[in-house]
Image (cartoon, rainbow, N blue to C red; front, side, top):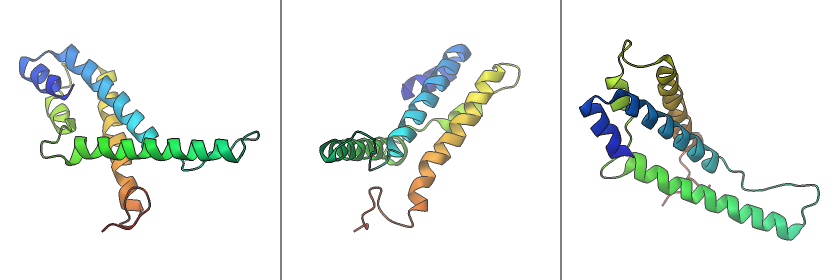
Length: 130
């Protein structure tokens, strides 16, 4: 996906670039949802066993989200293309919906990344960093 963003921008395939932006936005929304998964679940009919299974599933989703975030934003070859998308935006070339998607993508990217800062130096899963 991310290599397509660069090639579409280089080849000036603006409509394809708009579709990539929509997909990236959906991916970041999913990443935020996975990262914000509550460590506990509550249900009126849930027993002790169901609550433990829900907690384990949410913990696993959060770990997957942390892995995805590190590969997207912190890897040796970061695949975050937000800067490239903003640099290629032109008022007369792209639709208003594309601009809206870019704004929301930027907002969601900051929202996903600020969760770690709010934990006060703790690791993603609430443990002290070593």
